[in-house]
Image 1 (cartoon, rainbow over the protein chains, first blue to last red):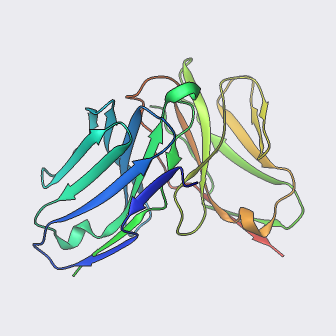
Image 2 (cartoon, rainbow over the protein chains, first blue to last red; image 1 turned 45 degrees about the vertical axis):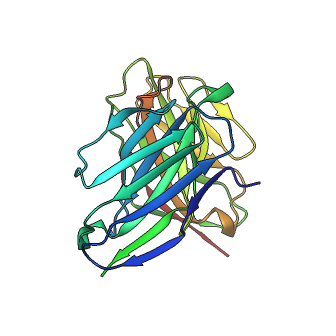
Image 3 (tube, each protein chain N blue to C red; image 1 turned 120 degrees about the vertical axis):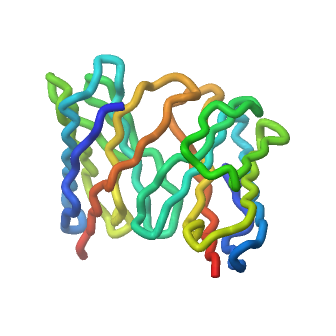
Amino acid sequence: DTAVSQTPKYLVTQMGNDKSIKCEQNLGHDTMYWYKQDSKKFLKIMFSYNNKELIINETVPNRFSPKSPDKAHLNLHINSLELGDSAVYFCASTGGGRGFDEQFFGPGTRLTVL
Amino acid sequence: DAKTTQPTSMDCAEGRAANLPCNHSTISGNEYVYWYRQIHSQGPQYIIHGLKNNETNEMASLIITEDRKSSTLILPHATLRDTAVYYCIVRRALGATNKLIFGTGTLLAVQP
């Protein structure tokens, strides 16, 4: 069974469009994250939600809006896509019985903005 | 969070032990050392973490110096599938607000 899943795996779109990436975890974790990995392979945290509440919001343009309908889901909506948004986006989760020792990452969504 | 310094890349022969060093000279008393790895095109994977004692699990061993200013991740019998970027991260263990701050990591290339 997949622990952290993301859809879609690949997303190719035009500048100016609005798109969403979905993330689901079946680990019973309380905390979920979005990370961005750019073309230079730097991996940076964007957001974190704990029990559906936003707790980490890094310096991210407000075109990015995370939404957590429940503890198991954290979606990322991006408005007015720009070329610089092209990257791989990773979802992760942590918490539950193991505390915050280990983050489990999804397979990533490769976003290409043309 | 304290910063870490790792070599950019390392090679290791298949079947041999891979020893990946990490310097974290500004680590605080309540900060743990975490290791993650990222195999090409996959999400990062947790390997191990420790505070001051050496730790071992099914994947690797973590050796932390007595002054905690550096550590070494040991993969006892490296395989080709261990080729990946290895990240050494220091952070406080508990709390949902504790972020993982990834550096540039060490690209370990396991050679046949």
